[in-house]
Every structure is written in structure tokens, then in C-alpha cells.
Length: 291
Length: 291
Image (cartoon, rainbow over all chains, first blue to last red; front, side):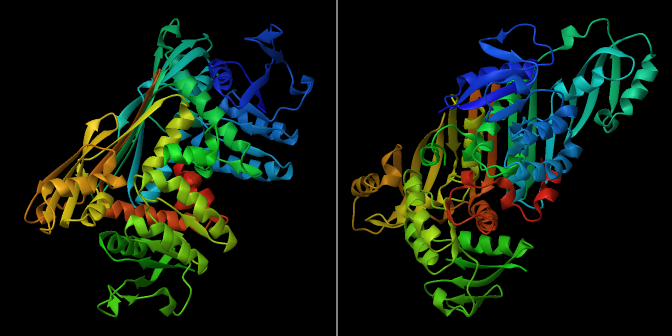
């Protein structure tokens, strides 16, 4: 029987998640949760404004909402007896979130997979493999150029900003710069917006450049990419991926949802999951195909 | 306390395994098992001709012997109550070996990690991640150019061969050719050796070329490499690694040994292991560093 998924939030990632769920043979989407659902159905799936309205309990909720509200939302769903998957991308808070959600998940006999995107996410698996291979090797991760969904969402919430797009530019060996296209709301100067943005942990650590524009739409592009590199002695390894940002995030979350239903209760990141558990089908058959 | 490792076999891979064990903070090598140990110690480690001679039971045996004898040796060690790790590289027999060793491991409350090299091994993890990301994507793995240890060992056992080195040449999109430098023993013609080699499953599937030489030594080089590629829609991903073949195999086995001691009883491949379990140190600390 197909496992019952609900999608929480229907932005770009939510829509791609629905597509990925529909392409899976082992999942069905039984509902979309949105703050304000304009229509009864979206693409054949019933929309609800609250999980309480669902006629049956879903197996897993895939959270396609801003990162900042993910930990709290995951906790709320776990307490309702629903497994959760999210793509929480605030690197500095991941371990803390695992430690916070772990006991909640265990208490309610559920699983939570945290930070299941491409970075953090599939790139994290690569870093773990590199670290396992060469404990003392330096590992560098570079992003972009591409739009960061997480940073764009945060940039939009900054005082003085009406709309924004944050672009990640790689500076080499894991260093980056943030270029943010801002449509101001008129309440703050460019300098004030810069200061407000720098005060947020998302923008505190990398060089920041703000460009004031009338409309951010032309800068909205889903293409992105990552490069994870390691070199140690005679071993050189690199993992390079170019992605459609919300689509790849969605696909990783659906794979993580599959693993969530195959793990004992607890909170996990992608490096806690046996990769075979993320793949549709039977274990031995997948070992035959992939090992 | 450091976990007690024994190394079974002391060829190139065995020697690199000893080096990797010595560099680990959580392992100590308490013995080397060799058919004929010429000296009492090798590099400070006691050598034995049988595991029964060891004064204490090791936690894990790392098998650095030819692939063909690995499954049988692993089974023997499991039955003695010792966890095992090997780099079994006969792709077509991996799933079968997992199914055979699984119940033995479970019965003796032990773990066996099978095929823990770089391919099968770390490359298998990448293929599993690609498959999780894009269930319908074509995944291509290419090797070389480089010497295949497994194929070289088998080539040496072929009737008519005194010594041999097998080189893997990539033909693109996962296709390969085998070039084998053979020093004949005089009992067979080149054509007979070709036929004998083609009859072995290791050489049955790829184009084969044999070159007769007086000495294979100049062709013995540890450098090798692998490329795992996937492309599907807007996603393009590749994992490229150049390695010192026996060194990287050794390092993967030591990482797998670590995971073996952290898994419930059973037989596993690398795609069955949470990557974090292969890394020295505490889980949450590693999540902080790597996710």
C-alpha cells in the first residue's frame, strides 16, 4: 500500500514535492496544508488550512515552508503522531535541532528527518564520505552562482525590504559572497537595509552586496549548483552537481520521507540514513543494481 | 578504549590498512594473520599464522585477501565471534553474499561489511544517492585508466599465466576494456591464455586484450580512478575520484570497520550504513561539522 504524504506549504518547493510524490510508486499525496487555500483542490489534491481537517492520519508530512519555522512546525507534527521531513538550512542550528527533536520524536514513536535538501542534504553525505575516507583531509564546499531560496526568504523579511532575491557567488575554496537584489519598501535607506541584513545570522558571515532594483523578478532563476572537493595525498575527489534548486530539494525530501518510514523513532540528518533506505523498492534488489 | 583490529593478509592493501589503523584514534591493530609469517613482528605488530593463536579475541577482522576467498573467510571469522570487513569486488555476487552472510552474522550476533572498497564501496554510495535523487536517471560508472587489483589477482590464477597485471581502460558511458600484461609460464599459447581468461567471469563481459611481456613490474602502478555520472532534466551530477588503489581500499575498510562495530548484527554493504557511523568521533559533533 502506498504511504500517505501531506505537503505543508505550496511554494515552488511544495509544487515540485507534489510532482515527485506523484512520480513515486510507493507514495500518494492525500492533502496539502496551506494557510489560505483558495480552491478545494490543487492538481487533484485536496487542500486544507489545518492538518486537523484531514479525514485520516498521514504517514509523513513534508514541510515546504520557510526554514525558520521548520523546527517548531516539525515538533508540532511529531506531537500529532506524524513523521516529518524538512529541508532546514540554517547550518549552525542543525545539530541543535536534531538534539531538540530527537527526544520528541522518540516520545511519540515517530521519525523526523532534518535538513534534507541538497546542501545541507545530499552534499552532506558527500562530505561524510570524504571525511570517512580521509579523516584529516580539508573538505571545501562551494555554491553557485545561483539564487539561494533560504537567503531570499530571509532577505524579504528584513526591515525596509519589499522584495528580494539573494544570489550566492562562489569565491573559491568554500568562500562565498552574497549579492542581494532588493526592492525597498521606502522606509529605510540602502545603508540601513544593509545594516539590518548584516544583523541576521544568514548574512552575518559572508561579504554582502546590495543592489537596489525596481523589480526582482528578472533575477529569480531556479538554477544553482554545488561543488564539494577534497584532496589528500594521492586521493583527489570532487562531487559536482547543477540543480534546479526547488526541484532537487523536493526530490531529496521525498527520498528522505521514504527513509523516515524505514527508520526507528528519532531525529535524523541525511548522514544518519543508510542510503539504500532512501530508494524505492526492496533492499537486496537495490544492492544488486547499485553496489 | 581502542577497538581491537586484526588484519588478515599482508599484501599492498593489508599494509595500507595497518597504516590507516595506526592513524585512527579509535582502533589498535593487535595482530596480522598470514599463511606464512617470516618474522614475529611486522611494523611493531605481532604476526600469526592462525587467528586461534591470538591471546585475546579481536573486535573486527579486516580481510585483505583475494576477493574469491573473502566470503568463505568472512563466514569462518563470523562463526568465531569476530566481526568482519572485506572489499569483495565481484559485482555479480555481492547481493548473494549479503544474503548468505546475513543469517550467519545474525546467528553469531556479529556484523559483516561486504564490498567496502572504492568500487564497489564509496562509488556505491554515490550511485545510491543519485538513484534516490532521480529514480529514473541513467547512472554511468567509468573506471581508469588504472590497474585493477581484483582482475590482476584473477589473471595470475589463469592457466598458462606466471604473472599478470590487468589494466582497466574506460571506453565512455560506463563501458570498459581490459588490457592484461601477461608473463606466460610456457604451458599455454597466447590464444589459449586468452581463451582461459575469457572463461572467467571477471573477464567474460568486457573486451579483452592480452599483451605478452617478459616482466609485468613496469606496468604495476597504484594510481586509479572512477567517475560516476548522472544527468536527468536540469540536474547534472558527477563524482570523480583519483586514488591510490590499495590505499583507498584500505581507508574505506577501516571506516567500514568502525561502522561495523556500531551496527546491529547482520551483513551490510556500504549503502546499508549511515555515513556518520563510518566517521571517528561522536555523532552530534560530526553532524555539526559535516551536515
